Image (cartoon, rainbow, N blue to C red):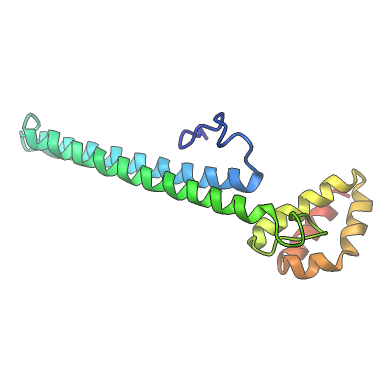
Length: 163
């Protein structure tokens, strides 16, 4: 996937977390869908106008310009939404009155369960390179049971598959 909804080399986007990168990929998918749909609509319109011998009319030019204008407006909406999501996620990832968010010292309950899954998985992957010790430590983690909810068993199965 080529990411062109944002310039990832710019200072604003160069230090994105994995969660933020997932947001960028989702926004890129939306943008790609908008572009594909606009191109499809343009081609259908051209073929319709050609079939009716009106391809050289200004109506085609105006209709194509309107499709392009709508496409750009939709892409701008997706980009603005992405910027808002990234800013909001960055605020939520900084921390609270107990300090910066870090699992297990100060877990971030503002995250979705799938995002929590990624945080806990990364924590255990960083703790040790021994898969058996990792699985044993995770099995003894009582915080993870409540923090991950339904995802607890999924992560347990994943860590067990590394053994």
